[in-house]
Length: 490
Image 1 (cartoon, rainbow, N blue to C red):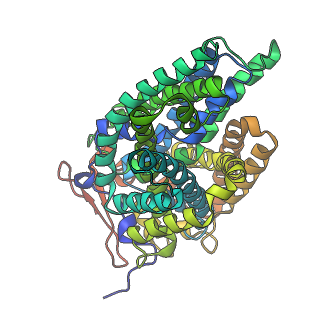
Image 2: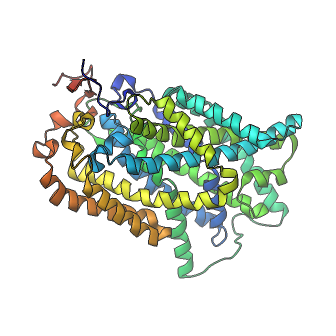
Image 3: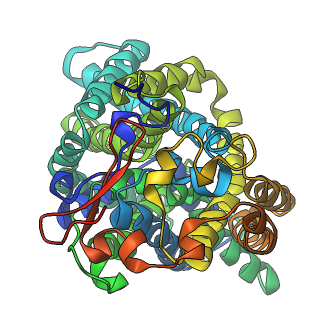
């Protein structure tokens, strides 16, 4: 029997239609939990320094709708072909080159895991202190981290089930939190809808408004790159060529659940800052409430960090680390690696440094979003020679496993985004997409032939749109089969 290819890790093979378990409601509930993080509250707190809260909320909705569209566009890679982020990255970066940008994202996700776990651990410690007098946040950090890692290692269905449980509780407690913080602001004589710490006027108002928009977009730039690692598990109609109908579940989650929940949490962050001049609602609540009420409000923080981490950080990071490790490094090992990295960075000591670094990483990853969309939609037109993604010496091996068009475009986009941090997502995305299109189409793919470009056949190179499950054999041969609703291809 032939030895399994390094590229054929069982956890990274295309997900079949029958294995897709995440429902429309489940995906939307994931978003409810994912947006409740300290950085989201920080956007609201920073916004009301120069703008009234209604403008901050409006800018958040605009930014969330925009990034939600990008997330849906890249998410089709997972829905159409069942591919994860690091596997598809073999197309624009090469079978070896995929590891460099993927690991950058994996490390960023692991660090966010550490930050959110610390945030949730402080809330957990507060609850235990109220109930029993216990006061040791580090023990809470370790317990909380282990619970999240075990939950994720059990698989995507376990992640969805927790979101289904946590989301309704988060929604109810968030409304209660809004009421408590509003009362606290009123007790200080501050009207939450008109108070501004240092108001700006004229052109400065428009600039501040744009900064809030792009802050929301930049914050989710990382997930817009690797959303295929989640979307490949989403249920979708087979033999559906209409893009909007095929991505209906994703559109509801990305363009309804995300903007509404993001706007409400930014609202809470803004009210928190108005109430106590601190965007951290844990700090604000400890000043505004006590006893049982405080414990319930802190419970929302714990559930939200748990829900955020398992879907937005641990799943993408574990998938990436599994891709780097190969067939002998399963998904659960990637989960453990993400947990170790997130703990080693010691977010409790480096919080003020890590946040700017992670937001910078989000900026440079925006170029990857542009490259992915350019490669998938404008060059390949959604047709992908999926079996070749798992071949050591196939069309995606390029020059010793490297696609220079992808790396040159990434460097240009990342460098450009660095010089305009307030608008890094837009600049990085635009330059990355444009550079890649020109370099790949008119240079790189002239040297390295791509089967789906030479023979642009829907029947050969589309997935769910034509009812196909991509079946990758563990020998060197790759076989393409249809899902039960279609006809077989080979």
